Length: 108
Image (cartoon, rainbow, N blue to C red; front, top):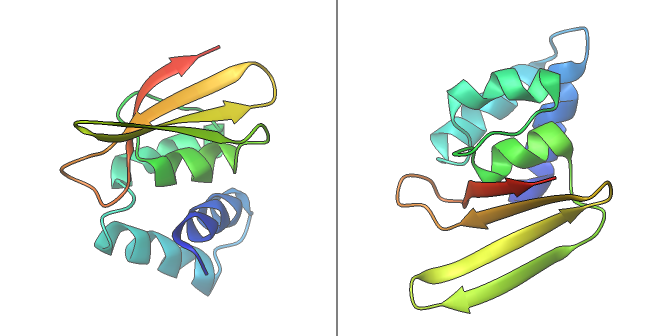
């Protein structure tokens, strides 16, 4: 399982009515691997995004983007633009605190 698949699965499990073993294990794994911040879990149920979320939190809230991903490589690292179908663009950049990128801008 790739890391982003685990993030998407976490979002699906969080929104299910029953607490399964998988639903309990995924946040522990993703938090221990520094991919998900525990404070982001509230956004998963609401399917909302916020500046400062990790890419994993974004995938758990909104699933994978339907319009693809564009990457830009610069001196400070690689930034990404995630294109969602309804005119939503999410921009991420590398993080020092997490092993995945962090949301830095949201365009509607």
